Length: 194
Image (tube, rainbow, N blue to C red; front, side):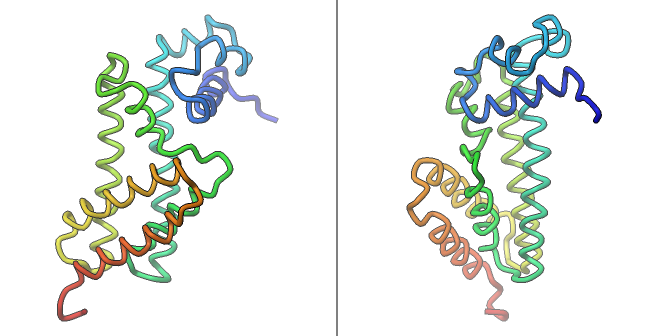
């Protein structure tokens, strides 16, 4: 069995703890203890806690976007409708460790200044821009008019679903999101196709 590197163990542990417990509540000492590495090793790989958060968010973006895009595309093949976004989100919501969006959580915890490290807010903004770009691509795939407008409208629904489900998971969020995204789809369907 291949043993993971100290950097990988630190990052995996930090990812789990940051997402589960929050950024402020997760101290460096806890990450060191649970990853089984020496403090010197952690600081050799990550000069500060914010550097570790930055690495976590980079990893989270890549992993989550890859999963989400694949999940949506698979559904689009069967049903080319914007409401498949809600179905993909529903799959994520029902995972055992769902704790909302790591980027929204980071900005909410740290405020607009993200703990005096503007890179973290920039990462959150870039993540949401990537998601909006993908949603516009989905709109184009569905043949909808004004795909950038569709993305803006759909992002409000998506972000609302993420936060709402985190706060109250049994409120019909997925069905409501599916209905709203369906309405956005219909309102941007070319008249000739409607």
